[in-house]
Image 1 (tube, rainbow, N blue to C red):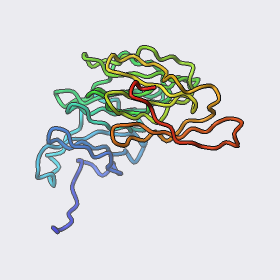
Image 2 (image 1 turned 180 degrees about the horizontal axis):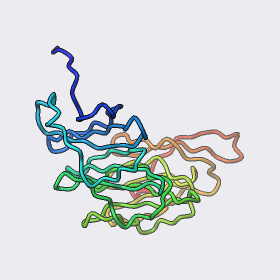
Image 3 (image 1 turned 180 degrees about the vertical axis):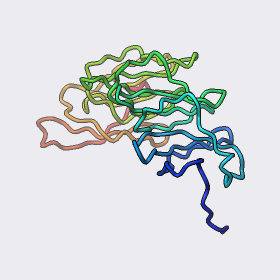
Length: 232
């Protein structure tokens, strides 16, 4: 094991808490926090000798009013992440020039972006409005946000995003099982009737999906379910 050595990450001692370390195309990206106003700054280096301040660069084009970053996800050699500022949450990426670029066509003033999932080499995620209603979006071929067809905003809870057999499954409001297929259309899985009170714990085993179902009026007994070959 080599010696531990401090790396000079910036030209100033005004930054602390280096975090969100992510490598994309042999370039290391990370964030630091300004100790005076808690704003987040993005940095990058692609030099193996990072013990030199000159080798660390600020990532250009990113909003410097951000105070929270999360959801660092790499898809097709592109790094995506969310930035939170006083206007809400926005989705950003590192473009081909190594600069920050905000993803367009996503609902403005969102309160949260979450459930980041890679399906068919495409990034899917949920967008919460200020009244906590959720939509599902994906990144389209042009790099913009696109709302998934078949979804609606009446749900306040979408969870358990799970990929199996070229389908993306998720649970809506803890009681409905939905799927998105290669046509990028969401539909509710049939065969799960209204006597169900809770669906949870989507799990993949041997290319099949299993989940727990708690039934109403049956002492809240939980039972194990799976889907048939038709996906029902």
